[in-house]
Amino acid sequence: MSYPGSIPGDHQSPLWVITGSHSWGGSGKLDTQDKKSPFAEEWIPDGQLATLSLDSSKEETIDLEDHPDEAPGKIEVQQVGPLDPSVPSTCREHGHQLSLFCYQEHKLICDQCKSLGTCQAHRTKPMEERASQIRNKIVDQCEKLQLQTAGIEKYLAEALPTKIPQVASTARSAREMIIQRLNFIRDVCDNEEQRLLEEIHAEEERAQQGILTQRAHWTESIKKLSGIRNYLVDMLTKMDDINLIVSENKMEDRTEEAEGILDPQESEKLNFNTNCCQSPLLNRLWALSVLCCTTACEILTFDEKTMSPLLSLSDNNTLKFHPKKAKDYPDGAERFDHWPNCLAAESFQKGVHMWKVNVESCCAYKLGITYRSIARKGSGNDARLGFNPVSWVFSRYDKDFRFSHDSQHHLVELLKCPAQIGILVDMDTGELIFFDPFSCVILYSHKTTFSAPVSPVFAVADESISLEK
Image (cartoon, rainbow, N blue to C red; front, side, top):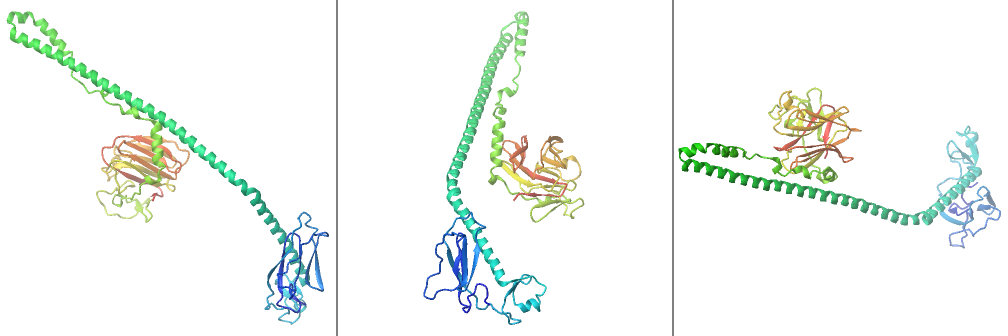
């Protein structure tokens, strides 16, 4: 008995795999006179039958009635490779022909292995039946591959060609949307620009008109005072005693007239009111433009000389809180000794500056800016962030968010706890903005006038915070 797929008497005969749509045929023996690769003839399955043959004396017929929906195709027989001559056809243990397949061992065995050997209790099947099962699997797999090929061909023929116009249409709609929105923004900005310019022009005219009016008024007052003074000088130098006494009432009237002219006073009406150029729309657009500009974010470093003993600094620029002292730091004039505060090494005197802080794992923190003149020692408010006039901070305690400055606290309502807090400060205009970097939503904004350089400041009372790199 020969090994499945082999040619009796010829161990070098090649193996062949049959492919195609329901067309199966071939021979395990190659005609020596025919040097071509053996391909089966095109076959129309009248009886839905195909024949697999290993030699001229034995054929196996496969019924294809289970697949009536598949269209007939061309039969192709492709050479896979020659039979491996190292594969034995007899049992190495008993020397008998291999005739059974053992499912537990997953190998071919002889009848002695089944009756006397290690496979007595194992489930076995005749080699021919096992080979037939494998052929049926090959048939099923070929059908699956054919269906898969048909699906890919259909995708190439139908789905992909429609993608090109769909992509073009979607891109056209996207371009139209961008143009439409930017045109709308331009129109809104143009209208806001016109309104603000008109406001500024009107304010300028008002202030200048006030100055001109004041100039005319005080010029006239000077003339009046000069006339009264000349009159009094004439009375003093030209009148005799009788006329001087008689003219005393006139002198008092003129003096009262002079007293009615008050001294000039500084008035805000004579100054340009900068509030006329304040625009919530412009401020928000400007802030969002800065916030969305990733290159504007600065890289800060913690100033270890100012770090509280309740804090420690890790290698990845993380500031961690310790309920008890982290370690004994060298004491110095710059170090906070009570509140868990720390300054950044950087300071800003002019321009626009922005930085981000990761606060996802912290439920108690303060972030903001302060003058470097802030007190460092003791538990008083002069060293407590947000409780003195030299610090401006955004704070969180559990789910309570606040902005604090000079002991004035403003509650900030948030729907969720931000994973990052961004701080934007414009030293020239005195604008301080806290925002959520992920959504570019402004959490709180504050306007003031800075009288000295400021430094970023941090306080941590739970877990840790880290600076964005």
